Picture 1 (tube, rainbow, N blue to C red):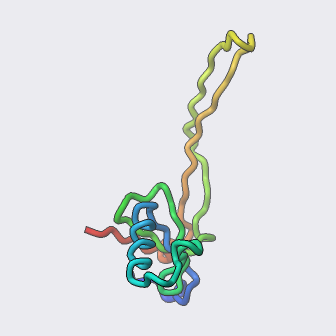
Picture 2: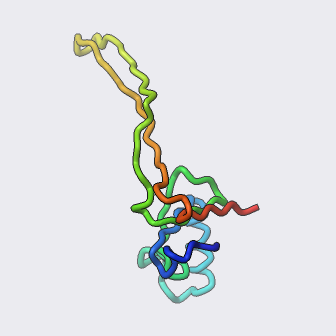
Length: 115
């Protein structure tokens, strides 16, 4: 994984899928059976970079960036659901919004997809 020079040295965080994170934990635990890695909370870093599980990444996808570089936003498409609830005798509303992230500085983002 080639990172931009400005975010090297442990400044970035590697976002990883839960399946890849679990596989990494088991691989390290098997390589070092007496380390107690799984018992003590697992291995939370790789080459000095923090690992963070992201449910939006698929297995085999890895993204490295500074977390402050990810700007949170909400889509302008909001779905409104409305129904009458007989049990509480009231009109109920549910608004479905789709949050998303955008990257502030694109050169600080490294995306890797394994084959």
